[in-house]
Image (cartoon, rainbow, N blue to C red):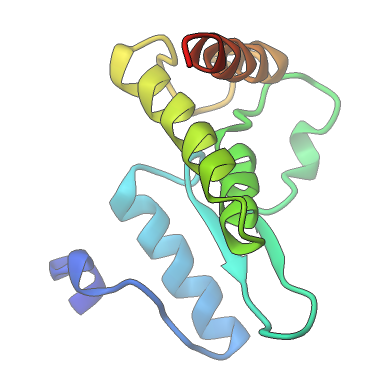
Length: 132
């Protein structure tokens, strides 16, 4: 209930796997949908895992229809975790800029091709680094 009512209260949730799956799916929908939500399973001193909340989406594999935004944002989380703060901020800024400008028109399947969104992010990063 508090996750829906006051999501800004939460930064980290420590839960068993099943509860975590439910809470992260709920959190994804509160923040804009499964297509944008990234997650990090952090194991300090061991191997950590970063992935889109929606998982691998095998029904969309190889069809160039799934939005890669959540996977790209998971990559940004990983960069931040390994200490590449500037790179993480660049990736996050590129995605944020594309969403705010309306270039990425939606996050569901069929709005943009997977590679099209990937190319948009790469172009945004390239033009941002060229202006430095």
